[in-house]
Length: 288
Ligand code: AMP
Image 1 (cartoon, rainbow, N blue to C red):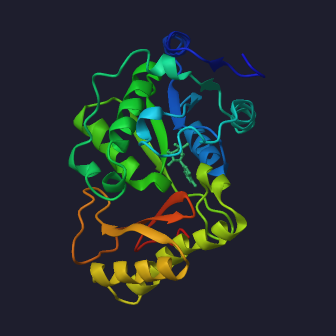
Image 2 (image 1 turned 135 degrees about the horizontal axis):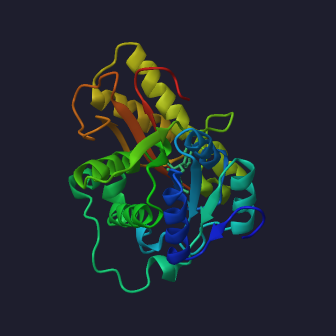
């Protein structure tokens, strides 16, 4: 225990508590995070509370989803603050393992994410989704939740996790939560702490580019190429370095020439030395 709620640091402790809780008839919902919690993560806890009896928040900066030269070593970490925030928001337990608990030996067996990882973020971050799916599967095996909550902020990740649950017959119900944004439209992200004031202003180009895509679509533009061009134009004008802009099917991630109301427009761009992502459905109620 640290503070008031149980903080489990080992696989053995976590599995033991999960088994006791479930043996006593309680269901568990898992909210996986890499910590440095912000309002986006906390909104997942809010949703989780209605999905099961106990909310478990995992906090683990997963090394295998970072590529060489990415920000693993400088990723923000503050476990004491995260525990306070999660507890105040209604989490019942925290699973915060050290790296050698999750990776006690060289990892030999991995989850192959398949073709859904060959596009968008997967193109620029080779191996990223293999690391993500492998750690999510391990967390599911250790916590044994009946449900788990992820954010749509990481849209491609949520599609891949849904696919993993379906294709590997995992007994976990998934909930995908809307994106929480700052009042100026910037999607909350643990990586926003890297941004200088100037970078932060430039970063608003991401949500602006998505609003532009939505507005063009609402005016009748369905040509995916032209929508992507418009998005790229907004990103470049804002001084961002676009990595990709894509109009894709929300399940298959296929890029078709014609956009529909369910299509998702997703962007990744570099601001200074920080890579940021954002996305929106082209139709339906505005979310930015
Ligand atoms: P992370 O700590 O970045 O791995 O994120 C943990 C979970 O929080 C993932 O499911 C993310 O999609 C979700 N998340 C991160 N940022 C936001 C946000 N701004 N709004 C909603 N969910 C978010």
